[in-house]
Image (cartoon, rainbow, N blue to C red; front, top):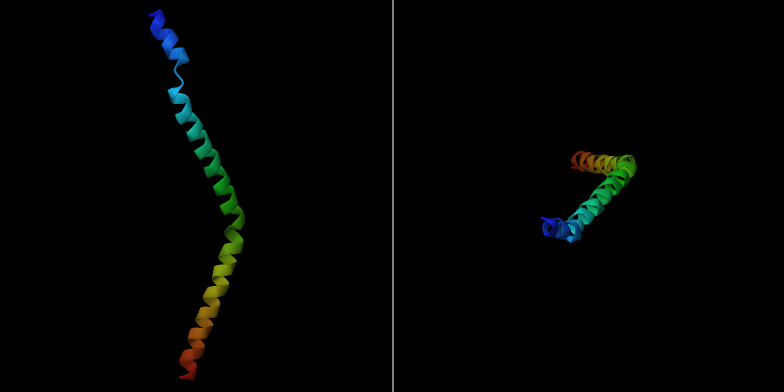
Length: 64
C-alpha cells in the first residue's frame, strides 16, 4: 500500500492535461474579452457595408 501511495504522489502524467486545460481556459476568456471589445465596431462596419450594397442595388434598379 505504501508503494502505491508513493507512486501516486510521484506520478505527474495528469499535470500536463491540467496545464493544457488551464491554458485553454485562459485563452477562451481572452478571446471572449477581445470579441466583446470589437463587437460594436464590427457591427457598425458590417452595417455600413450592407447599407452601401443596398444603395448600390437600388441605384442599379432605378437606372435600368
